[in-house]
Image 1 (cartoon, rainbow, N blue to C red):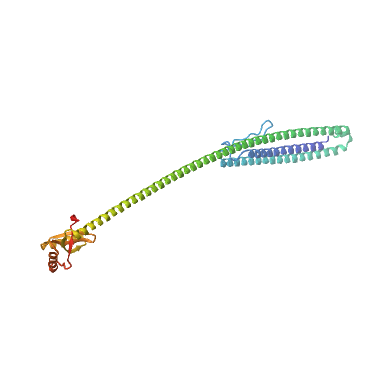
Image 2: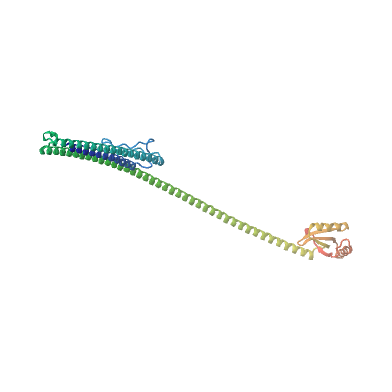
Length: 372
Protein backbone atom coordinates (compact mmCIF):
# COMPACT_ATOMS: atom_id res chain seq x y z
CA UNK A 1 0.00 0.00 0.00
CA UNK A 2 1.36 3.40 -0.97
CA UNK A 3 1.56 6.20 1.58
CA UNK A 4 -0.84 8.34 -0.46
CA UNK A 5 -3.50 5.61 -0.54
CA UNK A 6 -2.99 4.98 3.15
CA UNK A 7 -3.54 8.65 3.96
CA UNK A 8 -6.67 8.70 1.78
CA UNK A 9 -8.00 5.57 3.46
CA UNK A 10 -7.41 7.08 6.92
CA UNK A 11 -9.17 10.29 5.88
CA UNK A 12 -12.16 8.30 4.61
CA UNK A 13 -12.31 6.34 7.86
CA UNK A 14 -12.23 9.60 9.85
CA UNK A 15 -15.00 11.06 7.67
CA UNK A 16 -17.08 7.90 7.96
CA UNK A 17 -16.63 7.76 11.76
CA UNK A 18 -17.46 11.43 12.14
CA UNK A 19 -20.59 11.03 10.01
CA UNK A 20 -21.69 8.00 12.03
CA UNK A 21 -21.12 9.84 15.31
CA UNK A 22 -22.98 12.93 14.07
CA UNK A 23 -25.87 10.77 12.85
CA UNK A 24 -25.97 8.97 16.21
CA UNK A 25 -26.08 12.28 18.09
CA UNK A 26 -28.85 13.65 15.89
CA UNK A 27 -30.76 10.34 16.09
CA UNK A 28 -30.49 10.34 19.86
CA UNK A 29 -31.73 13.92 20.08
CA UNK A 30 -34.69 13.12 17.80
CA UNK A 31 -35.39 10.00 19.85
CA UNK A 32 -35.49 12.10 23.05
CA UNK A 33 -37.89 14.56 21.41
CA UNK A 34 -40.17 11.77 20.18
CA UNK A 35 -40.16 10.14 23.61
CA UNK A 36 -41.02 13.48 25.26
CA UNK A 37 -43.84 14.02 22.77
CA UNK A 38 -45.18 10.50 23.39
CA UNK A 39 -44.97 11.03 27.13
CA UNK A 40 -46.72 14.42 26.87
CA UNK A 41 -49.52 12.79 24.83
CA UNK A 42 -50.00 10.09 27.46
CA UNK A 43 -50.23 12.60 30.28
CA UNK A 44 -53.67 14.15 30.82
CA UNK A 45 -53.70 17.97 31.13
CA UNK A 46 -55.77 17.81 34.36
CA UNK A 47 -53.66 15.05 35.93
CA UNK A 48 -51.08 15.55 38.68
CA UNK A 49 -47.30 15.76 38.13
CA UNK A 50 -44.43 15.84 40.58
CA UNK A 51 -43.80 19.17 42.29
CA UNK A 52 -40.24 19.20 40.79
CA UNK A 53 -40.16 18.51 37.03
CA UNK A 54 -37.45 16.18 35.67
CA UNK A 55 -35.72 16.64 32.32
CA UNK A 56 -36.35 13.85 29.85
CA UNK A 57 -33.38 11.39 29.82
CA UNK A 58 -32.34 9.28 26.82
CA UNK A 59 -33.91 5.83 26.92
CA UNK A 60 -31.41 2.99 27.49
CA UNK A 61 -31.69 -0.52 26.06
CA UNK A 62 -32.66 -1.97 29.45
CA UNK A 63 -34.95 0.94 30.51
CA UNK A 64 -38.68 1.21 29.82
CA UNK A 65 -40.70 4.38 29.34
CA UNK A 66 -42.42 5.37 32.62
CA UNK A 67 -45.36 7.67 33.16
CA UNK A 68 -44.94 10.69 35.39
CA UNK A 69 -47.53 11.62 38.04
CA UNK A 70 -50.05 14.25 37.07
CA UNK A 71 -50.12 17.91 38.16
CA UNK A 72 -52.35 19.43 40.81
CA UNK A 73 -54.24 21.64 38.35
CA UNK A 74 -54.19 22.73 34.70
CA UNK A 75 -52.10 25.87 35.26
CA UNK A 76 -49.38 23.91 37.10
CA UNK A 77 -49.49 21.23 34.37
CA UNK A 78 -49.07 23.89 31.67
CA UNK A 79 -46.17 25.48 33.55
CA UNK A 80 -44.42 22.11 34.03
CA UNK A 81 -44.93 21.15 30.37
CA UNK A 82 -43.52 24.52 29.30
CA UNK A 83 -40.47 23.98 31.54
CA UNK A 84 -40.00 20.48 30.10
CA UNK A 85 -40.29 21.87 26.56
CA UNK A 86 -37.65 24.52 27.31
CA UNK A 87 -35.41 21.84 28.86
CA UNK A 88 -35.81 19.61 25.79
CA UNK A 89 -35.07 22.54 23.47
CA UNK A 90 -32.01 23.39 25.56
CA UNK A 91 -30.81 19.75 25.46
CA UNK A 92 -31.34 19.61 21.67
CA UNK A 93 -29.52 22.93 21.29
CA UNK A 94 -26.62 21.59 23.39
CA UNK A 95 -26.50 18.41 21.29
CA UNK A 96 -26.58 20.44 18.08
CA UNK A 97 -23.76 22.65 19.46
CA UNK A 98 -21.75 19.54 20.35
CA UNK A 99 -22.41 18.13 16.88
CA UNK A 100 -21.33 21.44 15.34
CA UNK A 101 -18.18 21.46 17.47
CA UNK A 102 -17.47 17.84 16.52
CA UNK A 103 -18.08 18.63 12.84
CA UNK A 104 -15.72 21.58 13.12
CA UNK A 105 -13.09 19.38 14.81
CA UNK A 106 -13.66 16.74 12.11
CA UNK A 107 -13.22 19.33 9.39
CA UNK A 108 -10.06 20.55 11.09
CA UNK A 109 -8.83 16.94 11.40
CA UNK A 110 -9.68 16.30 7.75
CA UNK A 111 -7.85 19.47 6.74
CA UNK A 112 -4.86 18.49 8.87
CA UNK A 113 -4.91 14.95 7.43
CA UNK A 114 -5.19 16.33 3.92
CA UNK A 115 -2.37 18.73 4.56
CA UNK A 116 -0.23 15.97 6.08
CA UNK A 117 -1.11 13.64 3.23
CA UNK A 118 -0.11 16.34 0.77
CA UNK A 119 3.15 16.84 2.57
CA UNK A 120 3.80 13.09 2.66
CA UNK A 121 2.75 12.80 -0.98
CA UNK A 122 5.15 15.57 -1.89
CA UNK A 123 7.88 13.88 0.13
CA UNK A 124 7.14 10.53 -1.56
CA UNK A 125 7.20 12.14 -4.98
CA UNK A 126 10.45 13.80 -4.16
CA UNK A 127 11.80 10.54 -2.85
CA UNK A 128 10.47 8.70 -5.90
CA UNK A 129 12.01 11.21 -8.25
CA UNK A 130 15.28 10.85 -6.44
CA UNK A 131 14.97 7.07 -6.55
CA UNK A 132 14.26 7.04 -10.24
CA UNK A 133 17.67 8.46 -10.82
CA UNK A 134 19.02 5.15 -9.54
CA UNK A 135 16.96 2.04 -10.21
CA UNK A 136 18.88 0.24 -7.54
CA UNK A 137 17.62 2.62 -4.85
CA UNK A 138 13.77 1.86 -5.05
CA UNK A 139 12.15 1.41 -1.56
CA UNK A 140 10.56 -2.04 -1.02
CA UNK A 141 7.30 -0.46 0.47
CA UNK A 142 6.66 1.18 -2.89
CA UNK A 143 6.81 -2.10 -4.66
CA UNK A 144 3.51 -4.01 -4.48
CA UNK A 145 2.62 -6.87 -6.73
CA UNK A 146 -0.87 -7.63 -7.97
CA UNK A 147 -1.45 -10.53 -5.59
CA UNK A 148 -0.61 -8.49 -2.47
CA UNK A 149 -2.78 -5.68 -3.79
CA UNK A 150 -5.69 -8.09 -4.34
CA UNK A 151 -5.26 -9.50 -0.84
CA UNK A 152 -5.20 -5.99 0.62
CA UNK A 153 -8.30 -4.98 -1.24
CA UNK A 154 -10.09 -8.19 -0.21
CA UNK A 155 -9.09 -7.61 3.41
CA UNK A 156 -10.31 -4.04 3.27
CA UNK A 157 -13.57 -5.17 1.63
CA UNK A 158 -14.03 -7.86 4.29
CA UNK A 159 -13.47 -5.37 7.12
CA UNK A 160 -15.79 -2.88 5.48
CA UNK A 161 -18.42 -5.62 5.06
CA UNK A 162 -18.02 -6.67 8.70
CA UNK A 163 -18.32 -3.06 9.78
CA UNK A 164 -21.43 -2.62 7.62
CA UNK A 165 -22.95 -5.82 9.07
CA UNK A 166 -22.13 -4.65 12.62
CA UNK A 167 -23.72 -1.30 11.90
CA UNK A 168 -26.75 -3.03 10.34
CA UNK A 169 -27.06 -5.32 13.40
CA UNK A 170 -26.69 -2.33 15.70
CA UNK A 171 -29.32 -0.43 13.71
CA UNK A 172 -31.62 -3.49 13.78
CA UNK A 173 -31.14 -3.79 17.54
CA UNK A 174 -31.81 -0.05 17.90
CA UNK A 175 -34.90 -0.32 15.72
CA UNK A 176 -36.07 -3.32 17.77
CA UNK A 177 -35.52 -1.38 20.98
CA UNK A 178 -37.39 1.59 19.58
CA UNK A 179 -40.19 -0.69 18.39
CA UNK A 180 -40.41 -2.33 21.80
CA UNK A 181 -40.36 1.05 23.50
CA UNK A 182 -43.03 2.34 21.10
CA UNK A 183 -45.09 -0.81 21.69
CA UNK A 184 -44.73 -0.39 25.45
CA UNK A 185 -45.67 3.27 25.20
CA UNK A 186 -48.65 2.34 23.03
CA UNK A 187 -49.60 -0.40 25.51
CA UNK A 188 -49.28 1.99 28.42
CA UNK A 189 -51.30 4.54 26.46
CA UNK A 190 -53.92 1.90 25.64
CA UNK A 191 -54.07 0.86 29.32
CA UNK A 192 -54.31 4.49 30.39
CA UNK A 193 -57.08 5.10 27.87
CA UNK A 194 -58.82 1.90 28.99
CA UNK A 195 -58.56 3.00 32.62
CA UNK A 196 -59.72 6.48 31.67
CA UNK A 197 -62.64 5.00 29.69
CA UNK A 198 -63.50 2.69 32.60
CA UNK A 199 -63.39 5.66 34.99
CA UNK A 200 -65.49 7.67 32.55
CA UNK A 201 -67.98 4.81 32.19
CA UNK A 202 -68.11 4.48 35.97
CA UNK A 203 -68.64 8.22 36.31
CA UNK A 204 -71.37 8.13 33.67
CA UNK A 205 -73.00 5.13 35.35
CA UNK A 206 -72.88 6.92 38.71
CA UNK A 207 -74.22 10.09 37.07
CA UNK A 208 -77.04 8.12 35.41
CA UNK A 209 -77.76 6.36 38.71
CA UNK A 210 -77.81 9.69 40.52
CA UNK A 211 -80.00 11.20 37.78
CA UNK A 212 -82.38 8.22 38.06
CA UNK A 213 -82.40 8.59 41.86
CA UNK A 214 -83.03 12.33 41.56
CA UNK A 215 -85.80 11.64 39.03
CA UNK A 216 -87.33 9.04 41.37
CA UNK A 217 -87.13 11.46 44.30
CA UNK A 218 -88.61 14.25 42.16
CA UNK A 219 -91.44 11.97 41.04
CA UNK A 220 -92.00 10.84 44.65
CA UNK A 221 -92.03 14.46 45.81
CA UNK A 222 -94.33 15.38 42.93
CA UNK A 223 -96.65 12.47 43.81
CA UNK A 224 -96.56 13.43 47.50
CA UNK A 225 -97.33 17.05 46.56
CA UNK A 226 -100.14 15.85 44.27
CA UNK A 227 -101.54 13.61 47.02
CA UNK A 228 -101.28 16.49 49.47
CA UNK A 229 -103.00 18.81 47.00
CA UNK A 230 -105.75 16.24 46.39
CA UNK A 231 -106.15 15.71 50.15
CA UNK A 232 -106.31 19.47 50.70
CA UNK A 233 -108.77 19.80 47.78
CA UNK A 234 -110.91 17.00 49.22
CA UNK A 235 -110.66 18.55 52.67
CA UNK A 236 -111.58 21.96 51.24
CA UNK A 237 -114.42 20.40 49.25
CA UNK A 238 -115.67 18.65 52.40
CA UNK A 239 -115.30 21.91 54.35
CA UNK A 240 -117.13 23.83 51.61
CA UNK A 241 -119.81 21.15 51.55
CA UNK A 242 -120.11 21.31 55.34
CA UNK A 243 -120.25 25.11 55.21
CA UNK A 244 -122.82 24.97 52.40
CA UNK A 245 -124.90 22.48 54.37
CA UNK A 246 -124.48 24.58 57.51
CA UNK A 247 -125.45 27.72 55.57
CA UNK A 248 -128.33 25.86 53.97
CA UNK A 249 -129.45 24.59 57.40
CA UNK A 250 -128.98 28.07 58.88
CA UNK A 251 -130.98 29.54 55.98
CA UNK A 252 -133.60 26.85 56.47
CA UNK A 253 -133.67 27.51 60.23
CA UNK A 254 -133.79 31.22 59.55
CA UNK A 255 -136.59 30.70 57.04
CA UNK A 256 -138.42 28.50 59.52
CA UNK A 257 -137.78 31.01 62.31
CA UNK A 258 -138.95 33.84 60.07
CA UNK A 259 -141.96 31.77 59.05
CA UNK A 260 -142.69 31.00 62.70
CA UNK A 261 -142.05 34.61 63.63
CA UNK A 262 -144.28 35.74 60.77
CA UNK A 263 -146.90 33.21 61.79
CA UNK A 264 -146.63 34.41 65.40
CA UNK A 265 -146.76 38.03 64.21
CA UNK A 266 -149.73 37.25 62.00
CA UNK A 267 -151.35 35.44 64.93
CA UNK A 268 -150.56 38.39 67.21
CA UNK A 269 -151.87 40.81 64.65
CA UNK A 270 -154.92 38.67 64.15
CA UNK A 271 -155.41 38.49 67.91
CA UNK A 272 -154.87 42.24 68.21
CA UNK A 273 -157.25 42.83 65.32
CA UNK A 274 -159.77 40.51 66.92
CA UNK A 275 -159.26 42.25 70.28
CA UNK A 276 -159.54 45.66 68.68
CA UNK A 277 -162.62 44.54 66.87
CA UNK A 278 -164.02 43.17 70.11
CA UNK A 279 -163.06 46.38 71.93
CA UNK A 280 -164.62 48.43 69.17
CA UNK A 281 -167.75 46.36 69.36
CA UNK A 282 -167.76 46.73 73.14
CA UNK A 283 -167.14 50.47 72.89
CA UNK A 284 -169.84 50.80 70.29
CA UNK A 285 -172.17 48.84 72.51
CA UNK A 286 -171.32 51.03 75.49
CA UNK A 287 -171.71 54.17 73.44
CA UNK A 288 -175.01 53.03 72.10
CA UNK A 289 -176.48 51.30 75.11
CA UNK A 290 -174.17 51.96 78.09
CA UNK A 291 -173.58 54.91 80.45
CA UNK A 292 -171.86 57.79 78.63
CA UNK A 293 -169.35 60.34 79.92
CA UNK A 294 -169.33 63.70 78.14
CA UNK A 295 -165.87 65.19 77.67
CA UNK A 296 -164.50 68.34 76.03
CA UNK A 297 -161.56 67.45 73.80
CA UNK A 298 -159.36 70.53 73.73
CA UNK A 299 -156.28 69.23 71.79
CA UNK A 300 -154.46 66.24 70.22
CA UNK A 301 -150.76 66.43 71.19
CA UNK A 302 -148.11 64.87 68.97
CA UNK A 303 -146.01 63.69 71.96
CA UNK A 304 -146.09 63.45 75.72
CA UNK A 305 -144.12 66.66 76.30
CA UNK A 306 -146.63 68.77 74.38
CA UNK A 307 -149.45 66.96 76.13
CA UNK A 308 -147.91 67.69 79.56
CA UNK A 309 -147.57 71.42 78.68
CA UNK A 310 -151.24 71.67 77.68
CA UNK A 311 -152.33 69.69 80.76
CA UNK A 312 -150.35 72.07 83.01
CA UNK A 313 -152.07 75.17 81.54
CA UNK A 314 -155.54 73.66 81.94
CA UNK A 315 -154.95 72.47 85.46
CA UNK A 316 -153.60 75.93 86.34
CA UNK A 317 -157.06 77.26 85.39
CA UNK A 318 -158.73 74.70 87.65
CA UNK A 319 -159.92 72.26 85.03
CA UNK A 320 -159.99 68.50 85.56
CA UNK A 321 -157.91 67.07 82.69
CA UNK A 322 -157.78 63.50 81.32
CA UNK A 323 -155.38 62.15 78.64
CA UNK A 324 -155.83 59.14 76.40
CA UNK A 325 -153.32 57.80 73.85
CA UNK A 326 -154.55 57.17 70.31
CA UNK A 327 -152.99 56.04 67.05
CA UNK A 328 -152.76 59.71 65.94
CA UNK A 329 -151.44 61.23 69.16
CA UNK A 330 -152.34 61.93 72.77
CA UNK A 331 -155.92 63.09 73.29
CA UNK A 332 -156.34 65.85 75.96
CA UNK A 333 -159.84 66.17 77.45
CA UNK A 334 -161.53 68.22 80.14
CA UNK A 335 -164.35 66.56 82.17
CA UNK A 336 -166.24 64.44 82.46
CA UNK A 337 -169.63 66.29 82.67
CA UNK A 338 -172.93 64.72 83.73
CA UNK A 339 -174.67 65.65 80.47
CA UNK A 340 -173.99 67.14 77.12
CA UNK A 341 -175.25 70.62 78.05
CA UNK A 342 -172.76 70.90 80.91
CA UNK A 343 -169.96 69.70 78.66
CA UNK A 344 -170.90 72.22 75.98
CA UNK A 345 -170.91 75.04 78.57
CA UNK A 346 -167.37 74.03 79.60
CA UNK A 347 -166.32 74.02 75.92
CA UNK A 348 -167.59 77.56 75.42
CA UNK A 349 -165.76 78.79 78.53
CA UNK A 350 -162.48 77.21 77.38
CA UNK A 351 -162.83 78.61 73.85
CA UNK A 352 -163.53 82.11 75.26
CA UNK A 353 -160.32 82.07 77.35
CA UNK A 354 -157.71 83.71 75.06
CA UNK A 355 -154.85 82.69 77.37
CA UNK A 356 -155.56 79.04 76.59
CA UNK A 357 -155.88 79.54 72.80
CA UNK A 358 -158.08 76.42 72.43
CA UNK A 359 -160.91 77.71 70.23
CA UNK A 360 -161.18 74.36 68.36
CA UNK A 361 -162.36 72.33 71.41
CA UNK A 362 -165.42 70.12 70.95
CA UNK A 363 -167.69 67.86 73.00
CA UNK A 364 -167.41 64.06 72.73
CA UNK A 365 -169.01 61.10 74.47
CA UNK A 366 -166.13 59.03 75.86
CA UNK A 367 -165.95 55.71 77.66
CA UNK A 368 -162.89 55.12 79.91
CA UNK A 369 -160.60 52.25 78.98
CA UNK A 370 -161.28 50.39 82.19
CA UNK A 371 -164.93 50.34 81.28
CA UNK A 372 -164.55 49.24 77.71
